Amino acid sequence: MLYRVNLLNFFFPIDDNLYRIREAEALKNHWKVCWLLLLLSAVVHGWMAGLGLGTQPISVNATAFSQLQYEMTKFWFVLGRIGFAVLFVLLVLFVPSYIFYLLTGIPYKKLLIMQQIVLFIMLMERVLWIPLAVFWGLDWHVSPWSFGIIASYFTAKTWIIYFFGAISLFQFWIIWFQARFICYLADVSRRWVWTGIIFLHILYWILAAALAVTDIHLLGGWFG
Image (cartoon, rainbow, N blue to C red; front, side, top):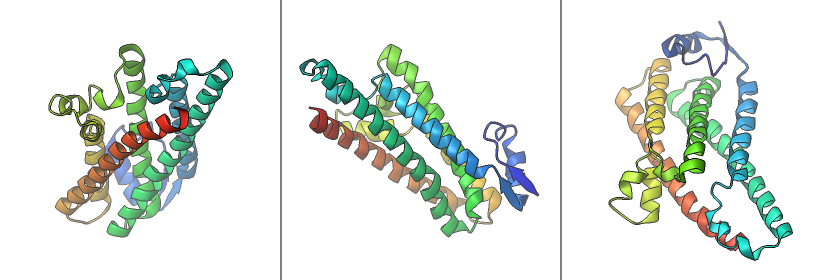
C-alpha cells in the first residue's frame, strides 16, 4: 500500500490515516512536506520578527540608533529569527523521530509523519498568537491557551512563568496525538509510551524556558 502524506487531510479522520500509515509499504511526499514545513516555519518566524514580536530587549535602545543602524538591527534580528526557524524545524522533526525509532522500532519515516503533524500544530499555535500579540500585547507565555498566565499569579520568577507558558492546550493535544500514533503502530505498553512522551515534553518545556531567558540576555548584549 502506498501512503501519500497530506497534512491537511490527515485530520479527517485521524484513525483512518493511522491505519493506512501502519499498513503502508511505501510513503510518498514525506520529504516534500518536510521542505514545505521548513518554508512555512521560516515565513512565520520571519513575519513575527518583521512585526517586532520579541524585540523588547532591543527596543529600549531604539532611540539611540540612527536610521541606518535601526534598519541593520532589524535586518539581523529577522535573519536570526529565520535561522532559529530552520533549527527549530530540524529539532522537532528529526530528533524525536529518531528517539522513538530507537525505543519502539516503528519505521523512521512513519515517525517522521507524526512529527510533521506535531510541527504543523506548533506553527499554527504561533500563527494564532500573532494577533493576540499585535492587538492586545500578549506575550507568548501568557497566551489564553498557556499556563504561564496562571503561573504569573503565584510567582514573579521569569523562568517559572516561561516554563508554564510553554505548556499549552496545543501541547496537551500533541502529547495525546503522539501517544495515539505510537500505540497504534507499535505493540508497546501504553503506560510506558505515555511516561516517555510526557518526560520528553517536560525536557522540551525546560529547554523552551531556558532559551527564552537566554534570548533576552543575548539580544540585550548584542543590540544593547
